[in-house]
Length: 116
Image (cartoon, rainbow, N blue to C red; front, side, top):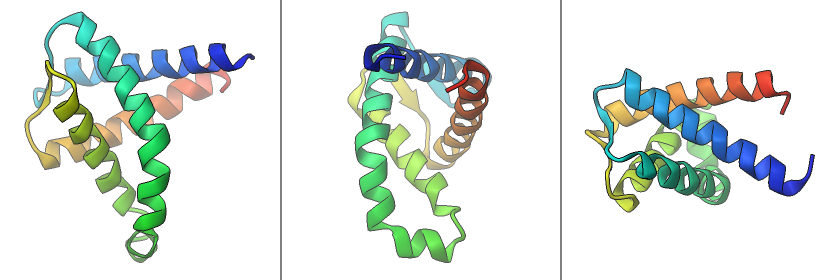
């Protein structure tokens, strides 16, 4: 699979995960449909660029909490994307942790089904 195709599949998975999270969680609001596409792109970029840096910077804390601090990192990335993308809102930190956990599990399952 080419690099462009992998990127498009990754983007599609992010958009689908955000769309389902918007449907299931009252704390997530994605207003116009174009916002969903932009939020999926920004979320994918933030996840690819920021998450490895944050994981390395917080490695002692992540080890101390047996990996549970990764949920906090996912929530921070989601809140950052909600702050950057107009029309995409998450009502608070604890809902962001739950939505981040849901998106991680949903993306994992979808990627397994797609053979990625």
